[in-house]
Image (tube, rainbow, N blue to C red; front, side, top):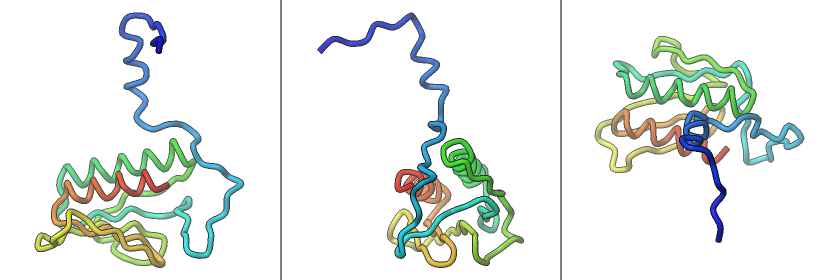
Length: 127
């Protein structure tokens, strides 16, 4: 197998692209057991959130905008609950790193902020 020849440091261009542009297929509709995160949703940070949770939430917001063409807000814990929300919660006693629950809203519960980040990355992969 022959590798593609590239100029020196050309790989940097690929590395700068965090999220692939326009991944969403606008012709697909969610099935009965699926839900759609659409423009107008909110990502709600947990009480006492730190830099890791904030960075993960902003990364997910960027993924939705760049890859899916969806604009959402990142909000503090005072914007708690409701439909059309990706709710992030920290529960230190959990056995798993994170659990994603999907109903009228999406809830990611994790034992720490790194678990929240992993849950958001998992959600990106599923989308």
